[in-house]
Image (cartoon, rainbow, N blue to C red; front, side):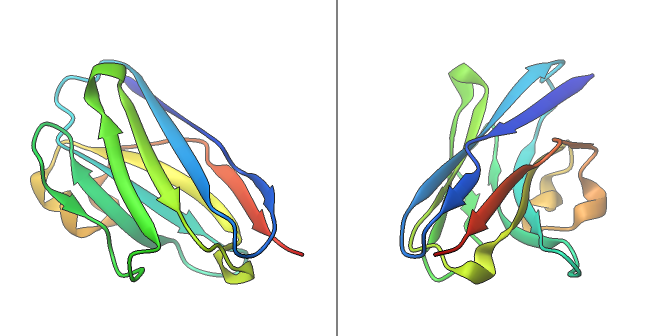
Length: 124
């Protein structure tokens, strides 16, 4: 069984950058894709992007370059670099693991393990 723990969230002012981390532990073998999602109050869960864990493919979603996903496989850590944060980015951010290659496209039900989430609040 794999465990995921997110960190790096907090309260920030508009315009700043923030990097979230997701640490994998346990039975990480079989991990094919790692993804980032977020959910704001009253809204549906939103796919942010994904990265192939054992290859070089990255899907940075549709955030016009503001969000970038990266990884350090040796340290079993996934990252989400977020630039120019705005109040509408306020949400709980989750990392998730999938054994399915097509999870790279962001289908949430293809992810079998989720972290507990980390809160990001953007406010002046």
